Image (cartoon, rainbow, N blue to C red; front, side, top):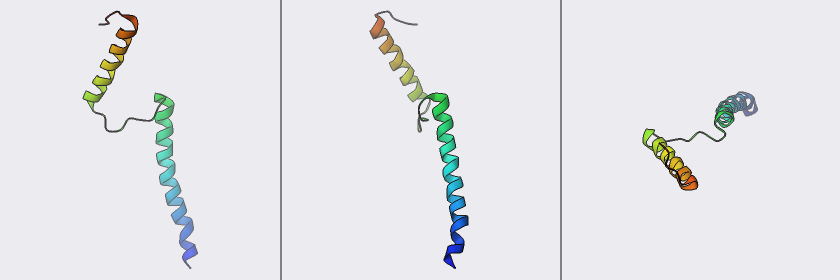
Length: 64
């Protein structure tokens, strides 16, 4: 009777997969890209600095 264990197993695997998929979809809808994993405050500050430097290089005007 191993076939009797398949439906509960499929439900459990499907529920776990759905939880991850919903979380990915929510982050993608709000951010426009997947959530960046493993970033701390220093990484975010570097990203903002790089964006600012790119903008300064494009316009030639320093931004404060």
